[in-house]
Length: 267
Image: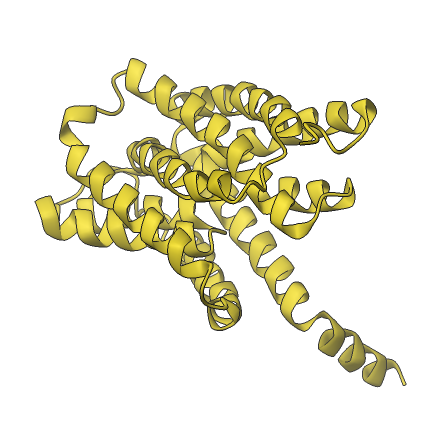
């Protein structure tokens, strides 16, 4: 087994890419936009890139989760049911993705991310303070934990934003509190789906561990800013990241069509 695949120089560059991705991910999600293309550009196969990305993202989500728990922003005893349903959902999603194609989800996802960005942009008072809770206990755990965990194991991009959105809209949390709780569930679903990548033997361990350390450092800084700056930082980051993720996914799916359309306009 090749533990690194890429050269020492590229491993060093990937460390800093993962650090930046961990910082972004801890605030608004979407760090995979940086790490997956970087891993592919470094020469990893698509399967290796996705598997190694899951390993490094575990480091970032664990770092942010640990910080939020230690600071008292999240009480794990209150989240055990959400964590359990998220883990189960992510495992089921990871199993299913190996048997099905995610093409339809890939087409719909940009629209969902655009909707999230617009929702935060056009409703500035949402998430300013705690509001009345709409779902409790198992119903919320199934929707906000299990369903999004399933999505994260099955496909993944934007899962952090979906977790935060569920905590804001269904639990009535303010945006900073929702982001802190979202990281706990994001870490859980990352671990669940990583297990199946490990069984498949696709993780490039040396590169992944170095990137995991970078993500850990970046996420710690981002987590501090979440509690210090709250929604003043999170809201614009969510809007920007949602827009960038949507644009990238649209380009990945329809890049040739877009280029043909632009060529027609300039003809």
